[in-house]
Length: 128
Image (tube, rainbow, N blue to C red; front, side, top):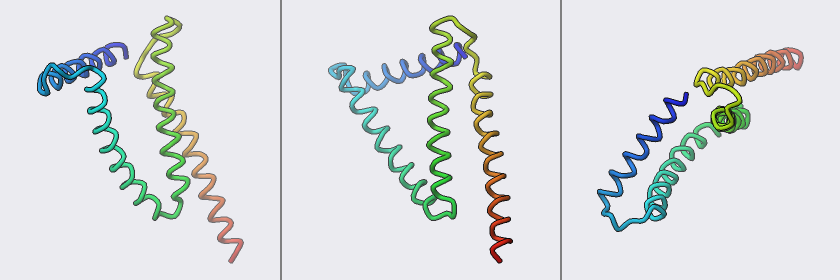
């Protein structure tokens, strides 16, 4: 995990230097961050808006959106815990730990979804 983060950090630093060199050395770090995160954010917004617009037309749209939001939050939380473990030296920072934490959420959600679907079909059968 530590190696993966260091690889990502090196990659980001290389991209940072390449962009700063392309746009000239007059750009400060703050200006570079303004442009990069501004562009990245607005592109991400349009993609998310399109995906959520499509999802809003599906039957269980709120449940799907809640799952996506929760999963995103869990990804951030899992990696924050792994980074904290490396920083405090109170555990091993491993990618497999992060994956297993996310699998825990996915499995618990799948159990919830199966119970919900079974309950839905029972409700529909009794209602007829």
